[in-house]
Length: 329
Image 1 (cartoon, rainbow, N blue to C red):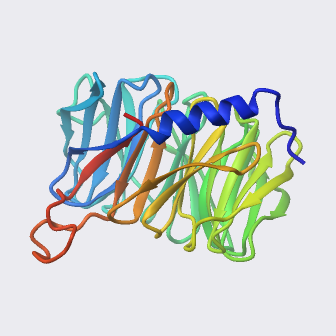
Image 2 (cartoon, rainbow, N blue to C red; image 1 turned 45 degrees about the horizontal axis):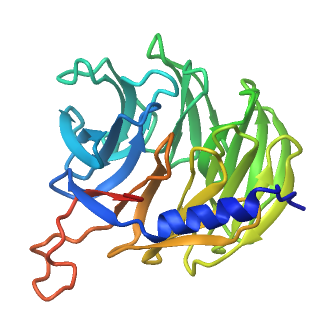
């Protein structure tokens, strides 16, 4: 059972008031749909990846995003993007072209490294010390890339469907969500199985740890969102306000709010300690990816935008495709 702190009521009231008067702004980024979005560790920059084969880096200042760099080099859609956990200038991208690219935004005209991946990568995450990047591909192969040498140092083929992946709070365990609804916990770096947590009644799709890694959340095809104690590996609570499979999750900077997106035309924002709804963000198309700013209650997201030329009668026809959207301004 979740222990609710004394300040919970005032926190919820404050956040509801803050987000209740917030608005969403759209900022042009790409020529085609944006698939992913992520803030760097300081919150000064935000990056997005798109079907247009680019990653765009924008700066955030005075409640606005301003385009800074276009990272070009991939030969197909940029599907995943992730910043170095502590270096605000370094980020990684993976593409349908089966490459991992590492970038330094101080020299955006060229990649630091281009590593050929084993198959098409659908999930990517950094180890908290920045030493290693983990990649999971469509064929359930997980490989680990050394950040300094740019070499694949190990890989493992799993015999179950692997979805989102990540390290625990001490980086000695590695988590894999699976098609059977479970979270598989392995020893790192050996990847020897430790335990399997039944989490969902259908595919377990996404996994996120809170910033302090005290909690982790899972989302599944059963439309449930589950909150877990990361130290005790114990279940805390579930809630479900979305009707479609949960595909993207993000904790805010203090770990007390969780944003969740699915194919519903809303983003659900909940108070982690109770699951109570504190805000709903209406979307014109379903969200691909949500990402909280690292120091403030500002949510970035990208959606399955329609081209403004695709259907002149559509209510979305005046929307610019490939936008990055910010809620909380």
